[in-house]
Amino acid sequence: MRDILAHQYDRLNFNTLWDVIQSDVPEVLALLESVLLNSTDDMDNN
Image (cartoon, rainbow, N blue to C red; front, side, top):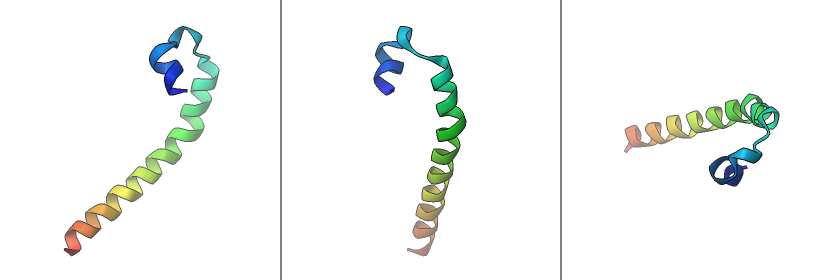
């Protein structure tokens, strides 16, 4: 999908993009938040 977003945006299916935003982005944000919180905790413990 990144290739289409970056280089072939005229072929982008906005319904598919919206589905990805709705379903995948919240999950990725939660994972990133967890990683960042854990890395901050590790830094505080050293």
